[in-house]
Length: 130
Image (cartoon, rainbow, N blue to C red; front, side, top):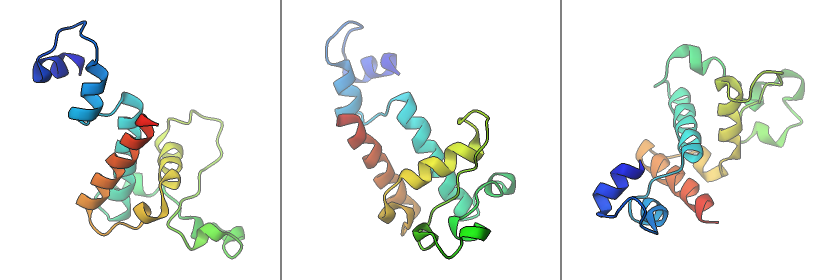
């Protein structure tokens, strides 16, 4: 990623400001933010039947949680239950609902995929700058 940024921005290997070029001019995300971005997009695909069925089956809406169906405020919002397992939190069935539930309410009810992607990347870019 750094080598590509050097070629695009015509900077040297040890030039100062390469990270600012990555964020402000090229609008690239760090690895962690890019992973969360892709997880958010994957949940969107699962919601609109664009992902494989075996992935969508792991997402359980909070409104379908049987014993808590009527008590949760999140039952009215587009959120998912996060399973409690003693496995790594990097597993799809735990990481995806966590990222999706972290998103703002207006992003969890998108109008179109293009608008969703643009707003999602904006959210991660803003969290980088803060």
